[in-house]
Amino acid sequence: MSRAVILVLLATAAVALGGCAVDPIHARRAAATAAAAQDSALTCVVADACAIASPYQDLADTALHESRPGAPVHFVSLLDQGADSLLLRVHLIRAARRSIDIQTFIFAEDDAGYLMLDELVKAARRGVKVRVIVDQLFSLNDTELLAQLARAHINFELRVYNPTFHKAHTQPLEFAAGIACCFFQFNQRMHNKLFLVDDRIGIAGGRNYENRYFDWDDEFDYRDRDALVAGPAALQMAASFERFWANRRSVPLSRLRDVSSRILADGLNARPYAPHAYADAQRVAALSRSADDANYVRTHFADQAMRVGDVEYFSDAPDKAENPDQPRDDELSRHILQLFENAQTEIVMQTPYLVLSRTARRVFAQQHQDKPQLRIIVSTNSLAATDAFYVYALSYKYKKRYLKLGFEIHEFMPFPAEAGALISDYDTLGDERESTQRYRKYGRAPLKEHGVRIGLHAKSIVIDGSIALIGSHNFDPRSDHYNTESGFIIHDRAFAQLLRASILRDCAPENAWTIARRQGTNWVSRLNRAIGDFSARLPIFDLWPYRYASSFELDPGCKPLPPGAPGFYDCYTDVGDFPDVDLPLKTIYTRIVTAFGAGLHSIL
Image (tube, rainbow, N blue to C red; front, side, top):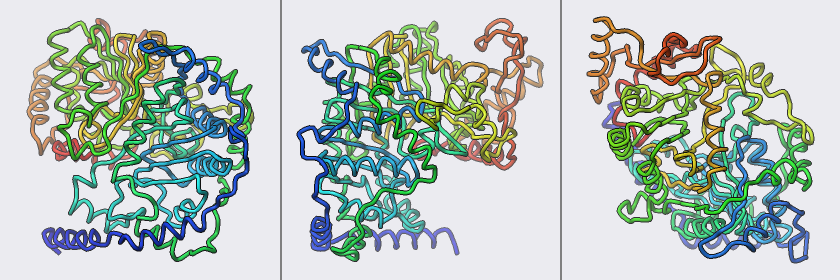
């Protein structure tokens, strides 16, 4: 079958599927059926909904009481470790008195996802208003589970953002048809991460709801980051959430074709929502005990929270891709560019994918010309650590471009030496297992070493050691133009220095490879670089295997040096393009995307 015929068939299927939106009468019947079957009983009838005591509620009281117009007060915790971040979410859900709002790109059906759902439904049953928005592409596609959630409780409501063909679950043919017929709509996703309790305590950053974001996966975990903020900036989060909740792309479950059909089929005698059985029940129970203990939360987290002044929460508009010329549509992207433009001495940036938009490249080029003293340190993934080799391929293609802009690039190792310190995992109350052992012994990562692979997913910036950004924005064309993004900008030198130290730790020689120009000054090296430069400028057929830059590893006994420093090549060994990768096909695929994928920046 020819490619043209396949595209016609896909487009035809797309038109047919797109015409099958749930009709209003069907949707009303499904909503009425779910409402009639909804649990409305409350397990608590007191004013605070039987919320547990929380030191963060106390900090929120202090921040809101002491804030003045033009002089806000906030308390901020940096959440560098996944299990800590999950523990605090569970704790805050149990401490919620009135409301819980959540936005996320991924909501998986695993222990972390089920734990969150179970806790949210419990909160709803004790009288807390719970609202959740999930992006459809990678979230909760079990229609039976979604039908149970639709009737779980009168205080619980979940909406799905930008569902393909008005369904929660997208079949492979529908996925292909969505790309064929409605690519720009299909390609625009809600990448926001928002967790908000009582409109006064919020968490934002890079984490979705899946085991690997909380150090619970036994094959691949993320080195990620959130910030917890108590204070008036939570009202900005609430306003952003309301915009998304009211937007037409956020669709109630009863208006999804597959879920509404399941609701009607189940009728009034359907099975109620019940807590899940966990794959690792002991680990869940241990975290649950810690989350219930206010003293544990106080001594391990709240007592270390930093008192700061100005905190801003920014979020793109829910219809960002439809109205790109409206000034508030890409609010976070514009603020990030402004931070880059205003930097005077140093930018420290961490991003999982080093693929810059044209606008960002122009800003950095101007900065490099106007402020050659400006230091730009970048922490990003190596091929061995990344979760998206095809995106890495574009970073690989343009490494010389970034080095020429003055970037000092450090690519994260899949088995960093400090894995035990970078990753937390609670088995018992307050007891951390030997994480370094776990991250080398278990798992089946296709690398030269065996262990639970770690990849960067954190998205953070520190400007001039005084301004910190933590959010969902990957600083790439997708985040600039297609995905909606969100995050905190925190104007406080002490907090910025804490974040800076965290990023630089990931750049340390024992945790990352340093990217630098290949050594060699003879005519063969110069010819290779000239051909490589010409090849890299080609949109396709960039096939030259010899690249300007390579990965370098610090020799024992040497002190770390930035690329270009005198003595760098005396202390660093060239370990090649793709260190630690033991899959020939993966390197071949990477080179193929490098050769043919230059036009795919925004898609990837």
